Image (cartoon, rainbow, N blue to C red; front, side, top):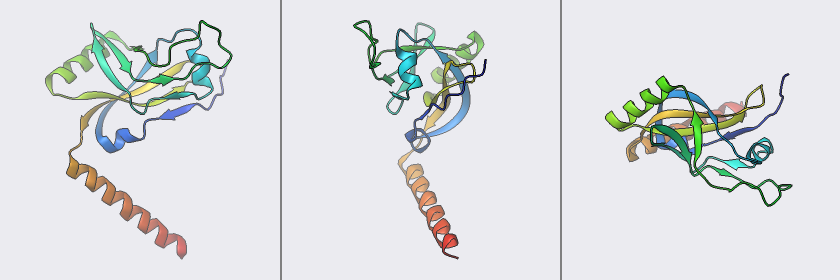
Length: 152
């Protein structure tokens, strides 16, 4: 069965604040009505980050709004949600974050073709202030070039 849902929730600040290195795709452990809210696009990963707790990886500060038609058994809005990765991927992420000082940043939350919620995380390195200024400068010059080429 093909599931055709266009949910694509992005963390736009991740590319500005971090230099993204390795990409991983993980499943999410969801409770109750969380998947219904995500399918409606009522989620945010803008302020979220990943953390290692007792050998497992969790996404922290991910907001999933309450489902409107939920009863008193509705889910909590902000909670730690466990990520589903293979053990070798988890061990690799634990090793890299401890040794080199890298961090894990969620960049995209989406529904795949089978109807499952997936989150895309990157192993990332924080940018310095001058790197951020350079990113702004590159973006402005690209915008100016596009503006000039559209006129002609």
